[in-house]
Length: 326
Image (cartoon, rainbow, N blue to C red; front, side, top):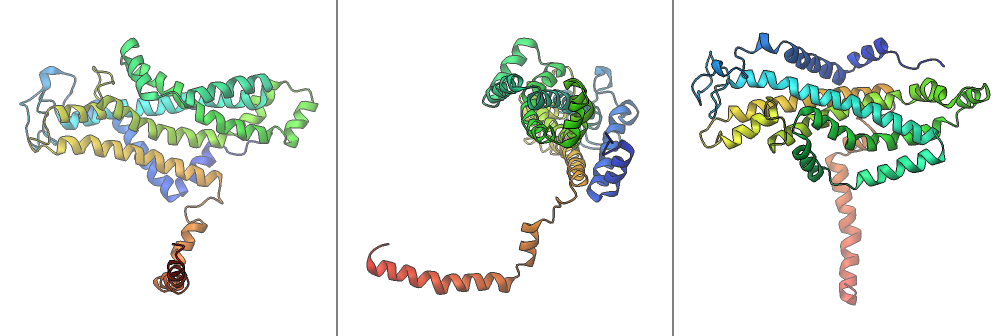
């Protein structure tokens, strides 16, 4: 079977997309920042000997000042926090993709028994409250980011599996799938050589969009104190800013820095995900029928609608009130 999308062509198409180009540039900057954190950050926030006075305002030495509670350089914390955000987001996105793809393909093509078993597990997982169980699991097994990635993966694959299953149910009736079956191909061969490439576009888009969502979720867990206490993350920076009284002392930059970092990361991956969505499905544009309709509706058109409502609706209401039916 001919592969529909190859990586170089896909990257080139995403780069040619305006939103995709912006997203790729931002993602590359985040990756460079994470890898070159020791070179970019003027101080090591993990080194207790490189901590200045507490609560310093932004200056040439400390670009974003220092924290009120520990005296750590906030700019250095921001740079090192990029590592945790990207690590948790990307690794969880990839893990969710692999598990969701395997379960979805197995449910759609593995037979009635696998389909029933996996879909019943999906139904149960969808109704489990994620946050309370996450709190219990982190308290029982530790608050390491490996455990957080595991929890996010366990609860994140179910939605993707349902989507992949529905797509597999359509693909397995295709002519090339039936031809492979008639040629004597095994189920595993058909699943991984024919069906998996057919749903690869969904997997790529899901990875980009899931990574963006996981970054927000990780920041929320760290803000609640459920993250790794030994690592610096943007969510932990927000939690320390709140507990240290950043707003009380007017240190708004301590809050704005990680907030902007979270926004840029999520924005970048969302742009890439939306660009991939339009690359794989060219007919789905942001300027769809509904948006074109709103663009064509000028003030005179809207005024005409209200005039028609007034001419037809109000007399009918008045007649109904006189008859006592309203």
